[in-house]
Each structure stands twice: as structure tokens, then as C-alpha cells.
Image (cartoon, rainbow, N blue to C red; front, side, top):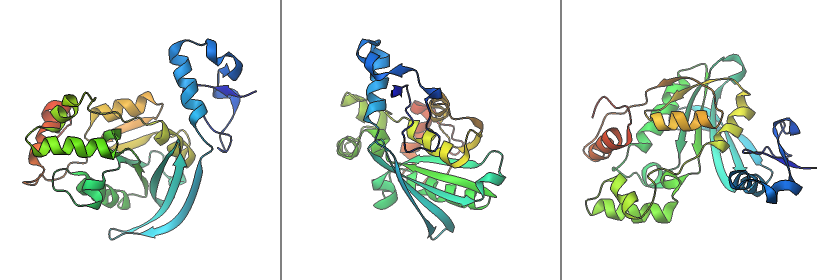
Length: 240
């Protein structure tokens, strides 16, 4: 019998087991709405695939591990021997094709990604986890539509709300799975300026020992965006 819970572990996982799980498939149609939503999410997961290689960027050397999980593809850049560190330094960052690939000046995503790699290389061990959640998980088409509104004078919060969207749709259940595969149930030290991300990750069961700042120096291009992140989204920023 297959059982389900809010966050399913697939059969391919080395940590798969029924101890976490609560509902038999046969009873799922009769569950309360919230439980049925969790059931649908659990059943949509396919067994995860992964592959690993050595990787060198302009910043330094890592192990690169790619995951196909929940219909998405994520990447972990791993430095050092994670087994030797009680609370590894971790950066969890969502994809931003405009910032990290096309070098947009409107956001700080590229600078944060590079700074996180550098900080983790200075540690004994750590992880940069790059999640497939473009545009705070609105997707690329919606993100570009919102960027057009920003180009016309809206800020990032108003651009989302004017299109009937929540400012941030990201979830971290895939991050929880990947971190558990890499470090088990150990706590992490999280590089973030965003208290909402900290709370959301903790709500997924990720243990966080402490938050560490990842602030970059504002530029003329991203200063206004950072001001909105601080004043309207609650990010902890000292240089804005």
C-alpha cells in the first residue's frame, strides 16, 4: 500500500519509508480539502533523478549536482566535505535568467550568487542551492510581463499585484529534499536578507541555526529595486 503526506518521499530516495506517511491512497478522495491537495502534490511527484560532476567556475571549484524533482530541475554547487561540518553554510537562490544569464542591471541576483559562491569557498564546506523558480515562481512569461510594467514605472510589488499575483509564490519542499539528501537532518547557516524566506524554509521542516547577511553594494541600476525589497518586502538591508 502507498501512503501519502504533505511532502512525499519517492521510492527512489534512499530515505523513502512509510514512517513519515499517514494516508492510504484508497482513502484520499474522502480526506479534507487540505489533505487532498497534499495528496495531489504527493502523487504528482516522479522519482527524482540526479547526476554529479566536478565543476569549476571563474570563482572556484565545486561539485555540481543536478536534480530532476517535482517536474523541475535544480542545481546544487557543493564545496568541501559536508560530513565534517555541523551546520554547513547554505545559500538557497531561485533562478533569474534576466539577472544571472542576460546580466540585467535591475536586480542583485547575479551579485548575490557570485558573493555566495565566494563566501562558501572560504568555509570548510557549504552549498549553493539554485532552484528552478523563475520570477519568484511566477514563471518566465509572467515575469517578463511584470518587467514590462516595471519599465513603465511600477515597482516590483505593484507590478505583481496589478496582474492579480502574489508577490512571492516560492516554496521550499524541493530544497528540503535536496538538503536532506546532502546533509541529513542537520541545521544550516542560511545566507539570506529575507526573513520571509527564513520562515518559509522553516515551515517546510528545514532546520536553520542562524541567518547570515548576503548584502551587496547597490548600483545605480538596482538601487530602487533594493529600496522596494527593504521597505515593502521586509528585507534586512543596511546599504539602501
